[in-house]
Amino acid sequence: MTDQPDPRLARLDGFRVEIDADRARADIVLARPPMNTISMPQRDQLRHAFEALDEDGRVRVIVLRADGEHFSSGGYIRGFLEASPEHVSKLAWNIAAPARCSKPVIAANRGYTFGVGFEISLACDFRIVSETCQYALPEQKLGQIPGSGGSARLQKIVGITRTKDIVMRSRRISARQALDWGIATECVPDDGLEAAVDALVDELRAFAPLAQRTAKRLLNETEDALLTTAIELEGHCYSRLRQSDDFREGVEAFHEKRKPNFTGS
View 1 (tube, rainbow, N blue to C red):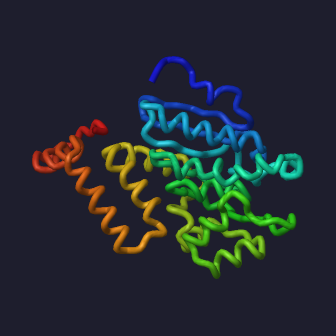
View 2: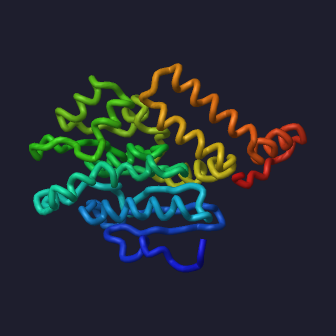
View 3: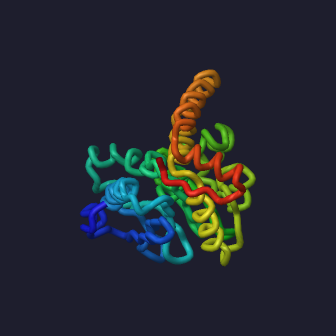
């Protein structure tokens, strides 16, 4: 990684990127309070930000969070009418950037997490929510449906019955219900959200990078696979990791009763 700033992280529309190299952490922070609406150009830039951070050797874990009491009320509504069909066709690809990213991605959700704000959170690996969080896909109220993968990802998590209830009724889901339904990874008091995210970042960066990247890709790519196919692919990945330096280090550290020093190779 050169010392030159990545041009993909310049002139960001409605968000900023913070990198803490000492903690191997990068934060993508929605910064258009009070509602942190997400514009059409911003969606392209968010994709570019995830791609840039995925290539940044200083970063092990990415956190998606927001300024203020609301994560995001969703997209800039008039922008849907102003956007070209070509631009609109890229919406789901852009918002899927956290899922394509090889590194662990944590969404920190509080307050309104609606529309595209919910959809990009669903594309993350972990969703830590404060008790103030409300999830919703309100597009039916506009005569539309979710267009960035929200209904599809949600159905994988909660099933068709609950997804119809959320999508077709534009129903809001509380933080506690999101946890009960498996949408949220963890639910914490509002004043404990940052501490919970910090703890998860530290936990994740203590693991072997190669094994984490492998686990994420394997789980994502076998979500729709037959059980026999998923087991076979898991075996191939397991076999490859047995040859890694990190696996040898992990085994030796276990037997020597010390903390492993993983290098990502």
